[in-house]
Amino acid sequence: MRIYVAVTDDPLFQFLRTRPDLDEINFLQPGGKRRFQALQPGEPFLFKLHSPRHFIVGGGFFAHSSLLPASLAWEVFGEGNGAVTPEALRRRIQKYRREPSKRGEDYDVGSIILERPFYFDEADWLEPPRDFSKSIVQGKVYDTATGTGKSLWEEVRLRMSALHTGRILDPQAEMFGEPPVAPPRLGPGAFRILVTDAYERCCAMTGDATLPALEVTHIRPPAQGGLHRIDNGLLLRSDLRRLFDRGYLTLSDEFRIRVSGLLHQDYASSEGYLALDGLSIKTPERLEHRPRPAFLDWHRRKVFHG
Image 1: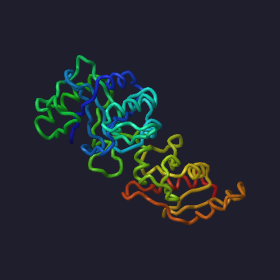
Image 2: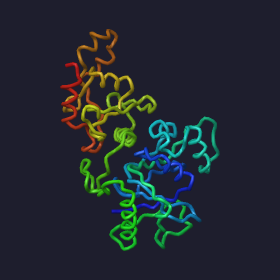
Image 3: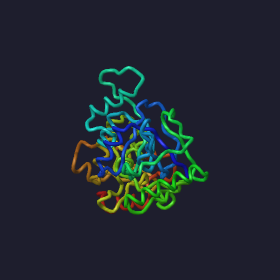
Image 4: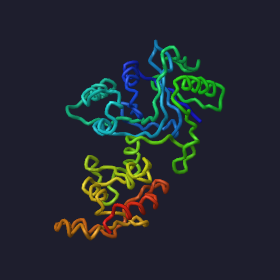
């Protein structure tokens, strides 16, 4: 297992620690040039304050990384981005970007989604490993199989136990599909971004790539016993998402679109939707991310007007 120690500023840390109700946060990289790839889902991501407050002060568990328009980051995570308003988020992004700002520009930002954030009391702040130079700007990876990484993780686990946060996550414990290291249970924000990226930001039914017009939906909603899982999600154009949720559309186990006969009865001008019947959807590249037959079966039995 690996641990990433990320450099952050004190105002961001103080902002987040005063919002313990946030179960997932979006650690931003304002430059928006490259996706974070240092960790696998479920591995720890730690916060270290800028020098002179050269301490590890908390962290979370890595779920996913992406490059997102700032507007979408705000829409999905809100104050979990470390800002109180969209305008404050934009000012924070502009502060760290090296490029001159453009009026009305919707910046792309690096997005590191963390689940189960935790924050240490100041008396429990941890000095970083000796080889973590104060000149490091972004962060550094440690392997828990080595002496330094192992010692660091033991110290972090000890402090987490003191927080009385319940069971300490074993990254192998909660399997999600079949990845080598499994993430913790996803929150709604991580679910939305993971599904959006799994479908390559295109509507599964039409291929439309107009991101502001696309919405993520559950095949089996959490209120009906579903989970925030990639194989329980679809990325659809907003009108198709509503029709799917209301039972006018569904999918076969072969990922073909089925259109309910009630659609034309209820809405005479629905020929454009009827033309979708029998077409195959665009599915995620990874097999374990494609719609799970059990969820599709539930939707056909419980929601679809067959």
